[in-house]
Amino acid sequence: MSGNLGRKTQKMGARIAFSRLGRLEAPALLLLMGLGLSREAWPQSLIEALTRSGLQLILPDNRDSGASEHFHNWRPTSGQVIRGIARTLARQPVDAGYSLEDMAADMVGLLDELKLSRVHVAGISLGGMIAQVLACRAPNRVLSLTSISSAVGNPKTGFGRLRAVGGILAQNRLSERQKLRFWAYLSGPRFPLSDADRELVLRNSKEKSDPAAVGRQLLALLASGDRTEQVRAIRVPTLVLHGEADPLLPLAAGVETAKLIPHAEFRSVPGLGHALPEAVTSRYAEWLVRHVASSS
Image 1: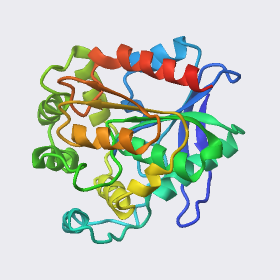
Image 2: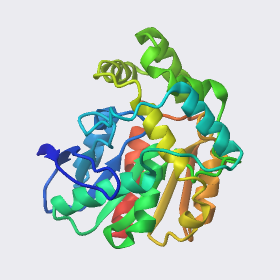
Image 3: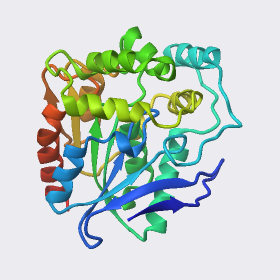
Image 4: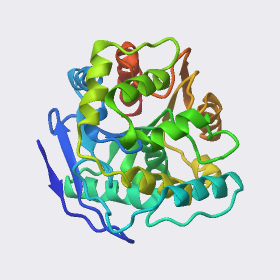
């Protein structure tokens, strides 16, 4: 089942596109993708492993991603994005058209439309940040949280290498060969891209381009600032997964996330960067399924 939903959030409102897989009566897992990527960026092997386990999957496109609503009337310049990063590093407030809180509210609206009272939530990178906000702001809707390759907005732990940050911002200007080289770098030193990984990167690169969307989403997460105290208040069962060679959101960001949330389980993968290469999807699926089962 798939479709588009109309939904108004408190500030701007967003129409959210989604896919729904699996049996409707099965435990539901909401999967939130990262910066600038659509639901099509989830590795197929991970999706198949999760559905085989008996889970129902809800796969939305975040606002400004994929087929969900894009806010074309707000077009931040590269200078505005760079200033936003600089202000974050200086712990100064950042202005944006929307925030992580609005993106989490989109997901509450989606759950309302689907008549799902409580779900398990997992997100990678930006998706992990939205999932954290959802678990804090709407704990009555969240059975469990899995934060993958993510951070809490603390600039001391969550700012990676300039090459990684610059490559993410430059995605729309890279050729297919350059994108493959960049994603091989993001994947980590122990995980060269497989044929399936390369196919996924190239398929994502063919999606309709919205050059300003990544800037809008990045400013949104910067505008939410350091969420340390918010994350500290999370009480739902939590699993934190992180690559030990992540060049974009360093390992310290994942360690900090797990330490802040009482009783959170932490797992790291040596040599893994900021990606879900084919070589780790079965491991991640096993950890996710076990966490969902223990939290149901």
